[in-house]
Image (cartoon, rainbow, N blue to C red; front, top):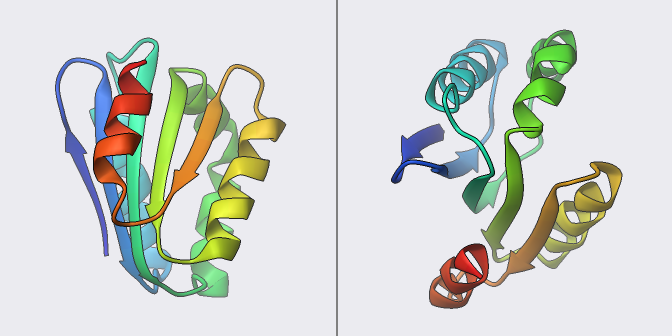
Length: 121
């Protein structure tokens, strides 16, 4: 499951769980692009539970959309990642180092209040 919810003028809340296949990846990326259309200096709150590696076809869909995804990332300056997987926390924060202008900070699932406070700071 990949669910995107607009939360105010410049924030998206994203829920990710389970395994994504090509079709669900296509729908998810379309929704992400659509809901971030008018966002500037945006914030994202990811909640990742029961994460499973996407299928190869889903990864192919994501790679085919990389140019538009880079444009989308520029709309955001902060992302908080809530997950119970330490390795996902580390990977998330590493990704933040790869994208200038986007700061990513990871939190444990039970630290939602701290994540939201950080997003607003």
